Length: 442
Image (cartoon, rainbow, N blue to C red; front, side, top):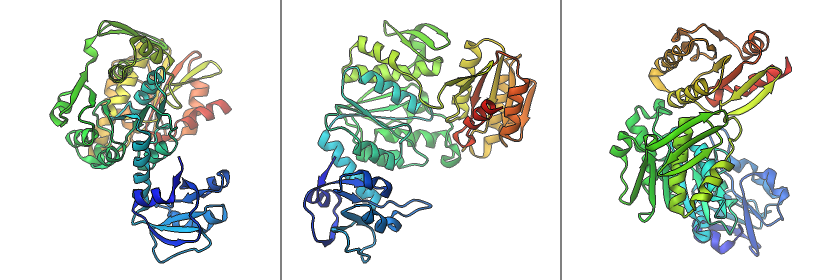
């Protein structure tokens, strides 16, 4: 979406420090590398991070064709630019412009958060909404302030439904995002122990997640997976729907297929697991609120496919490897293991890595995963990681712990029984996809 200079100044409350030519309309770019791909009518907006400062690339931006730029440095002006805009905070300016786009295009906005399942639920919901509406969504896990802005700036002008994923690491972050996205519907997938290291306890996690209702349209809807903690924490005066898997009947699961009956209607999804049924229930309720027909809800659910590193299946020689290592916390790991071990047939192996940001009880959390696996004799347990070794120690299974990914890859290639199916699960920082690549090369 392009802006004229008057719109930009009004929305961001910018001060025009230098002006030689402000004619035309402009794109906004935060990356000097993309400027050469634009049509020459662009403004560079430098962002700051822990390890970078976009202000250091203003000259490069001008060289690459930016006509003007934003700055937080009031007395540092490059007059090679057609104009210079001063703002106190460039990220705030970016967010203000994003909100302006949201209000100008004015789609119905559905915001999604939760301790796990956010991206799956977002992708599944978008698949359903696309059957009926022109739908735009956050890319991958673009769920922070910058990701939200990128989502807004890439939104087509004819968008009718917008699905926004919202992550958080501390209190106040989701409230900030909702203040700029102004959602009509808010979804919380679940409340779990992810980020307990930062927030201290599950109650604080619930408070942080329930910020999704802080700027929620009072005439909209809140949808969540039913839990006592959610009910105690949520403050929203509008319509609320809390879903329960216990309301489903005739649940059946096999590889690549789960069927269930909910509210008198039979549904089918192309992934396994009760946790995916829980995600689907949120999607069904949100789609019904949006006005999607039952037939189109069914169609959209069938169209959903997992994205990269979420139940990604590879065949390597005589082994099947399932990579679900995008993220992990105790709740999501237990749920995935339960599904894998109940649906897939022996021989089976699980390769587990560290779960991050679990605070002072991190060792106990890992040992509990090992205790859970003790109920599944015959499964091969492999672990990699400083914390993951406590999964092995907590389990009565015969297990192998490896100090490196290379050692683990060699063991998988040379020691696992032909026909074994292996599940990989760990926090993203473990980069378990590297193990798959190593096995392929052996």
